[in-house]
Length: 310
Ligand code: NAP
Image 1 (tube, rainbow, N blue to C red):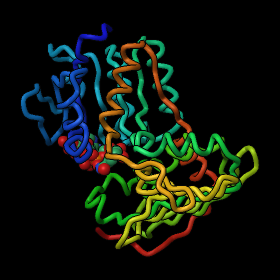
Image 2 (cartoon, rainbow, N blue to C red; image 1 turned 60 degrees about the vertical axis):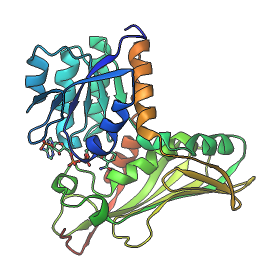
Image 3 (cartoon, helix red, strand yellow; image 1 turned 90 degrees about the horizontal axis):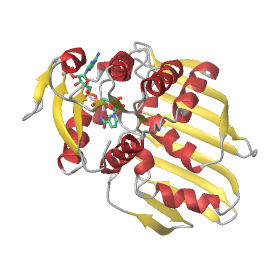
């Protein structure tokens, strides 16, 4: 695809993230022309609207690529249909409801000569690259991930998130893991505890212990029951000092001194990366964060906690 022709894009699953992030990012990006939307109950102004992706793909609207922003449980079928129709695919995070379905999409994309992008927006937070460089230049002793937020504030009435395949607290937790797998040495889970509300299929909290392949302990504490100030921190004890990556990756401090912070550019950068891989004829579909979630479910001890009502 020529570097001057805009990518004609269809967007699927018009909900919170599409309105908050995708549409504003696309509006300002000359690399894209939003031409269509597919959503059962919502429409996007100024484009061709369909209720299903199948109708969108069968229409005479010319589309080069699709962004799939529905809940993870229904994303695979849509991705598979788009790939088979020769479209490049941008997957919201998490890229699927299971590891094997994403592996299948990777193979299908390669077979059909289209680009597959497993987007991990938190990796594009403004201080993440600086944290990665800091850690690469020192020796890690241990690290701790603490991702604690109020589910009622961030996910009001999102029924899908509590259903099997909806990830529960791993929906935000996988953002932390997407950063951790980018900045820390390779690691593997050694034990986990998952806390399931009595009336739900997905966990409201989880603790995971990892070990880096170079031996250091890494812990993760995810909790959706935190009211008041919200915590999205990764700390690391290193030979060069105490690193704190806070605000979901927006600020880096070492021994209390701020080394990097900046404005949120996560979605403009995701779309820049997607255009780059489409034009290069490449794919970018790292499943490491998803694999860690799957491992936590496999290894995890189940604890049943108080029922959750929105
Ligand atoms: P949402 O507001 O619930 O929107 C998802 C949309 O998908 C719905 O509005 C719905 O639109 C459509 N949909 C299609 N099949 C559906 C089904 N079976 N159940 C429910 N909705 C269905 O969710 P969201 O917050 O935008 O999250 C969507 C994805 O983006 C998730 O994977 C999430 O992890 C990711 N994400 C969210 C955020 C955030 O801040 N919310 C941030 C980053 C990434 P129709 O009813 O019109 O079809």
